[in-house]
Length: 166
Image 1 (cartoon, helix red, strand yellow):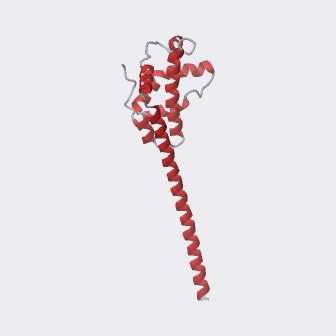
Image 2: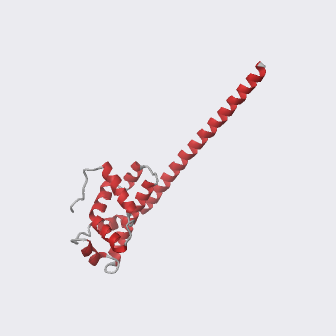
Image 3: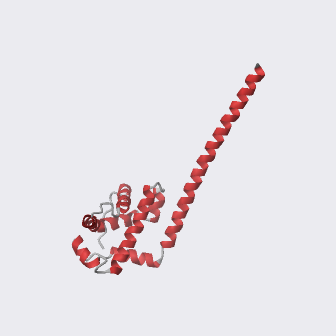
C-alpha cells in the first residue's frame, strides 16, 4: 500500500511540474513575442526618421496662417493644396498609427520615446479644430481617433504641456 501511495504521489508531482513548465514556457513565449513586436515598431519608426520626415513634420507644424477650420480647408485641403494636404495627412496618419499601437498594448514609454509627447500635444492641439470639422463634414466621427487617443494619453503623462506658439 505504501508503494502505491508513493507512486501516485510521485506521478502527481511530475504532472504538476509538467503543468508548471508549460505555463512558464507560455509566459516566456508571450514575453518574447511582445519584445519582438516592440523591436519591429522601433525599426519601422527608425526607417521613417529621415530628413524628409523632419522637414515634413516641421512644415505641417508651421502651417498656421489660418483662422478657423473652414479657412484651413480653403488653403490646405486636397482640392486647393494637394502637396500641403498630403504632408498633413501623412503626419496625422503616422501619429495615428502610433496611437493604434498604443491602444493595442504597445509599451507607452517606448511609444512616447518614438513620438515625443510634446510633439503629439502640439500636433493635436493645432489641428483639433480641423479634425473636428472634417469629421462633421464627412460624417465620419472616427476620423483620426487613434491620433486623438495618443494625444489623450500624452496629456495624462504631461498635463502641463500646451500648444507651443512658434
